[in-house]
Length: 156
Picture 1 (cartoon, helix red, strand yellow):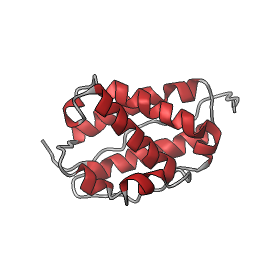
Picture 2: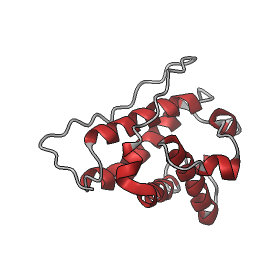
Picture 3: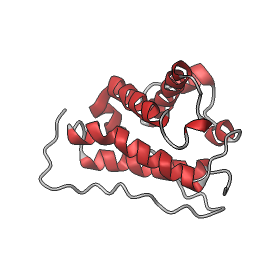
């Protein structure tokens, strides 16, 4: 589905991280997934993990490309579920408990910024091709921005 935008209202700003503060998380508008579809969501995470593989934070991800692509599918399953789609993550991996799953990895505030900037690059085709409304993209971005704050577990 293509949308027409006369002016862009997207604000892909990164909310500053504050130690010890876990802001409330609002799930993305499920129309984001309805509009782009499951396959585009999976493509988004393939692009994202391909970019992460070459990013400054690549050391907290699988070292081999094949394992990285498996991780991208797990993430896609999670985000499909968060966006109101089928419960793939729960069916294949159990309850998300994302803070616990990320606990073994050193996730710093600076690493979070790299993660979000990489995510923004991966979102670019969805934005450029207007596969959903800017409001839905904003809703998705707002979720990942706050979600990423919850994953930070070390300051250095």
